[in-house]
Image (cartoon, rainbow, N blue to C red):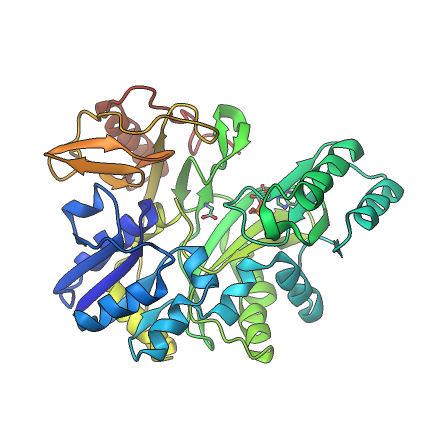
Length: 421
Ligand code: AMP
Ligand code: GLY
């Protein structure tokens, strides 16, 4: 099969390495890809939002499977564009990807179908939002921009003042553009967070092994929120008992709710959960694989990913038994100095072999460039260094040994991945 991966991050590199394990994968293209991906797949220079360009390329090369990995092209209908052109594509249509693209939609969906989540109110008017926050007079309180905001549209306000400022910057100063036309004001929940990715064909949902993301930039969960600085799988808080509760109260009801709304979801649905004292609740849905969750979940997948993609597209997921490797995986993200605020690009990297890897670990490239046999930094999150082992402790040790082999000026990584609550 000829496969086209759409995207350019560590998640896409993890998907590519897994697809390459399939005997069915004969040729793999990636648009637009990155330096490390160029060592595994043929890079195609088409922008991630260029639906027309992607469809034309897929037709020209007779692509058998297109995989749309990032949130923006999904929300913009790239899967719909492939479908209209008769090209098989993995990922939700725009009408289903709205579960991530609009927090107002997802919160209203959960309320309507009784899926556990934080209590909330929606506002399209800054003045009304501020009146509400002031009259409730509760802190911490969570302020969320409705739309996609590169993972930055959520503010945990520690005081009423801070919440008011957040509303002003989202709704009046349009910090996140039109994503801030509406806001969700939400109850602050506590408890450990768990990420559960699930394959679904719109009828049947098959959760993958669990994981835990570390979103803050610095050790001890200090600093700004990032796209994710490291992950572990499995998540120690996700017991079999909690998994059963989630299946009954969250996973199945969500798939059913999307069907009832006439928006069947096909692809990978990401459940961002919090295990609160009142049980598991949904913090957010994503319409795609998480990054860097994919970098610890996919290495543990035993079943052929191409078979899974086909079963999802053909709505035959219930017939497929999905198997996982026991043990654990850990991923440590190496970022550019200054990320997530401002950082330099184009810094030469040392310690990687010509394939972009190191011994005894898997190096997934995110923001990198490959030129004349050398690798350079090209983004905020640069690499995701993953190791697998029988235990989490060993996986973490192996991942950190591998990280120490890789050098670039300003390199920043967390030292406490998997070691903090
Ligand atoms: P999101 O982009 O929706 O995943 O939110 C980013 C992060 O903000 C989450 O991973 C949580 O750590 C935190 N968060 C979001 N909503 C809440 C909430 N209602 N209560 C507590 N923390 C939250
Ligand atoms: N790691 C969180 C996300 O992909 O949204």
